[in-house]
Image 1 (cartoon, rainbow, N blue to C red):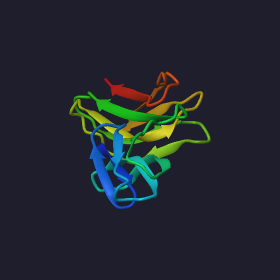
Image 2 (image 1 turned 45 degrees about the vertical axis):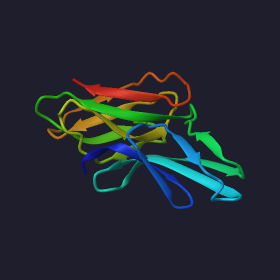
Image 3 (image 1 turned 30 degrees about the horizontal axis):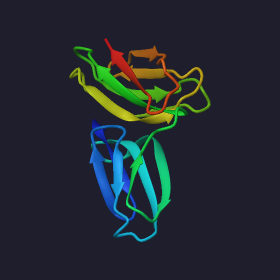
Length: 158
Protein backbone atom coordinates (compact mmCIF):
# COMPACT_ATOMS: atom_id res chain seq x y z
CA UNK A 1 0.00 0.00 0.00
CA UNK A 2 1.41 3.38 -1.00
CA UNK A 3 0.87 6.28 1.39
CA UNK A 4 -1.58 8.87 0.13
CA UNK A 5 -0.98 12.28 1.67
CA UNK A 6 -4.53 13.33 2.43
CA UNK A 7 -7.17 12.99 5.07
CA UNK A 8 -10.88 12.56 4.70
CA UNK A 9 -13.10 14.72 6.85
CA UNK A 10 -16.54 13.12 6.87
CA UNK A 11 -19.43 15.26 8.03
CA UNK A 12 -22.78 13.64 8.60
CA UNK A 13 -25.31 13.52 7.14
CA UNK A 14 -23.62 12.78 3.82
CA UNK A 15 -21.33 15.81 3.44
CA UNK A 16 -17.65 15.12 2.74
CA UNK A 17 -14.72 17.53 2.69
CA UNK A 18 -11.33 16.34 1.44
CA UNK A 19 -8.28 18.22 2.62
CA UNK A 20 -4.54 18.02 2.17
CA UNK A 21 -4.31 19.78 5.52
CA UNK A 22 -4.54 17.74 8.70
CA UNK A 23 -6.82 20.24 10.44
CA UNK A 24 -9.59 22.14 8.76
CA UNK A 25 -12.56 24.37 9.41
CA UNK A 26 -15.96 22.84 8.71
CA UNK A 27 -18.90 25.02 7.79
CA UNK A 28 -22.33 23.51 8.38
CA UNK A 29 -25.39 25.40 7.15
CA UNK A 30 -28.15 24.42 9.55
CA UNK A 31 -30.74 26.11 7.33
CA UNK A 32 -30.82 22.73 5.61
CA UNK A 33 -30.50 20.87 8.92
CA UNK A 34 -33.00 22.42 11.39
CA UNK A 35 -31.48 20.71 14.44
CA UNK A 36 -28.44 18.76 13.46
CA UNK A 37 -26.39 16.10 15.16
CA UNK A 38 -23.10 16.63 13.38
CA UNK A 39 -20.25 14.15 13.46
CA UNK A 40 -16.89 14.75 11.78
CA UNK A 41 -14.12 12.20 11.37
CA UNK A 42 -10.48 12.49 10.34
CA UNK A 43 -7.98 9.74 9.67
CA UNK A 44 -5.04 8.91 7.44
CA UNK A 45 -5.46 6.66 4.40
CA UNK A 46 -3.37 4.84 1.82
CA UNK A 47 -3.94 4.79 -1.92
CA UNK A 48 -6.03 1.61 -1.64
CA UNK A 49 -8.24 3.14 1.06
CA UNK A 50 -7.61 1.47 4.45
CA UNK A 51 -7.46 3.67 7.53
CA UNK A 52 -4.07 4.37 9.08
CA UNK A 53 -3.78 5.22 12.76
CA UNK A 54 -6.72 6.36 14.84
CA UNK A 55 -10.00 7.89 13.76
CA UNK A 56 -10.45 11.30 15.40
CA UNK A 57 -14.11 12.18 16.00
CA UNK A 58 -15.90 15.46 16.75
CA UNK A 59 -19.60 15.69 17.69
CA UNK A 60 -21.76 18.81 17.62
CA UNK A 61 -25.44 19.54 18.10
CA UNK A 62 -26.58 22.83 16.65
CA UNK A 63 -29.60 24.63 15.27
CA UNK A 64 -27.95 27.74 13.84
CA UNK A 65 -25.48 28.50 11.07
CA UNK A 66 -22.12 27.70 12.66
CA UNK A 67 -18.43 27.25 12.04
CA UNK A 68 -16.53 24.49 13.82
CA UNK A 69 -12.81 24.30 14.36
CA UNK A 70 -11.79 20.66 14.17
CA UNK A 71 -8.94 20.88 16.67
CA UNK A 72 -7.18 17.70 17.70
CA UNK A 73 -6.49 17.23 21.43
CA UNK A 74 -2.90 17.17 22.74
CA UNK A 75 -3.59 13.52 23.61
CA UNK A 76 -2.95 12.77 19.91
CA UNK A 77 -0.47 13.70 17.22
CA UNK A 78 -0.36 13.46 13.46
CA UNK A 79 2.62 11.54 12.04
CA UNK A 80 4.40 12.67 8.88
CA UNK A 81 7.29 10.76 7.30
CA UNK A 82 9.87 12.09 4.85
CA UNK A 83 12.03 9.43 3.22
CA UNK A 84 15.31 10.88 1.90
CA UNK A 85 17.05 7.49 1.56
CA UNK A 86 18.44 7.42 -1.97
CA UNK A 87 17.71 3.73 -2.65
CA UNK A 88 15.24 2.27 -0.14
CA UNK A 89 11.56 2.75 0.55
CA UNK A 90 9.83 2.35 3.90
CA UNK A 91 8.04 -1.00 4.30
CA UNK A 92 6.48 -0.60 7.73
CA UNK A 93 6.03 1.92 10.52
CA UNK A 94 5.51 1.10 14.21
CA UNK A 95 4.15 3.94 16.33
CA UNK A 96 4.48 3.92 20.13
CA UNK A 97 7.05 1.21 19.57
CA UNK A 98 7.55 -0.99 22.62
CA UNK A 99 4.49 0.43 24.44
CA UNK A 100 1.18 -1.32 25.07
CA UNK A 101 -0.43 1.07 22.56
CA UNK A 102 1.98 0.08 19.75
CA UNK A 103 0.46 0.05 16.28
CA UNK A 104 1.93 -1.37 13.09
CA UNK A 105 1.30 0.10 9.65
CA UNK A 106 2.31 -1.99 6.64
CA UNK A 107 2.72 0.86 4.15
CA UNK A 108 5.20 1.91 1.50
CA UNK A 109 6.72 5.36 1.75
CA UNK A 110 8.75 5.92 -1.43
CA UNK A 111 12.20 7.51 -1.31
CA UNK A 112 11.15 10.66 -3.19
CA UNK A 113 12.02 13.03 -0.34
CA UNK A 114 8.44 14.32 -0.06
CA UNK A 115 6.61 14.65 3.25
CA UNK A 116 3.87 12.03 3.57
CA UNK A 117 1.03 12.24 6.07
CA UNK A 118 0.45 8.90 7.78
CA UNK A 119 -2.24 9.25 10.46
CA UNK A 120 -3.22 10.18 14.02
CA UNK A 121 -1.70 8.35 16.99
CA UNK A 122 -1.84 8.49 20.77
CA UNK A 123 0.71 10.93 22.23
CA UNK A 124 2.22 9.15 25.20
CA UNK A 125 5.29 9.57 27.35
CA UNK A 126 7.97 7.51 25.65
CA UNK A 127 6.42 7.66 22.19
CA UNK A 128 8.80 6.14 19.65
CA UNK A 129 8.48 5.58 15.92
CA UNK A 130 10.21 2.49 14.51
CA UNK A 131 10.77 2.47 10.73
CA UNK A 132 11.65 -0.62 8.68
CA UNK A 133 13.06 -0.15 5.17
CA UNK A 134 12.60 -2.57 2.28
CA UNK A 135 16.20 -3.83 2.69
CA UNK A 136 15.38 -5.01 6.25
CA UNK A 137 17.27 -2.26 8.06
CA UNK A 138 15.42 -0.33 10.74
CA UNK A 139 15.74 2.83 12.80
CA UNK A 140 14.06 4.42 15.82
CA UNK A 141 12.92 8.01 16.27
CA UNK A 142 11.70 9.77 19.42
CA UNK A 143 9.54 12.68 18.28
CA UNK A 144 9.46 15.84 20.34
CA UNK A 145 5.79 16.62 20.91
CA UNK A 146 4.91 20.11 22.21
CA UNK A 147 1.75 18.93 24.09
CA UNK A 148 -0.50 21.36 22.19
CA UNK A 149 -3.64 21.02 20.09
CA UNK A 150 -3.05 20.03 16.46
CA UNK A 151 0.48 18.78 17.11
CA UNK A 152 2.39 16.70 14.63
CA UNK A 153 5.69 14.85 14.41
CA UNK A 154 7.83 14.82 11.30
CA UNK A 155 10.14 11.80 11.05
CA UNK A 156 12.88 12.31 8.46
CA UNK A 157 14.81 9.31 7.17
CA UNK A 158 18.31 10.39 6.12
